[in-house]
Image (cartoon, rainbow, N blue to C red; front, side, top):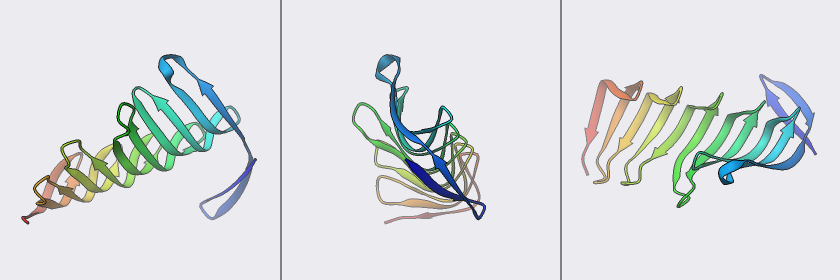
Length: 140
């Protein structure tokens, strides 16, 4: 299989193969590989989590979704960089609250909206998972 992708306006074509690797504890990887690394679109189950999305040179990188194994609850949907939530995404909590906005190095960082279960929400700037600067509370 040949995959074409663009990085910094350069087009790459890579010969890949689709495989499945089974690990201990029911963990596995299923998807594209190149040079013995996860590369392209794949599905990785590890540590009671399932990631489905893009990989680059063995790391979660690009668009991806993270689910819990037990009930397939969608925990995160968004951008990844070097195995970390980075860029824009949505982080959901089981109580119904969620954060939609910017991430950096797995933390809420940048502009975002934290939505509460009562339909109220905070909107503003976040730094390393904490609200910072001007943050507004909107009640419904």
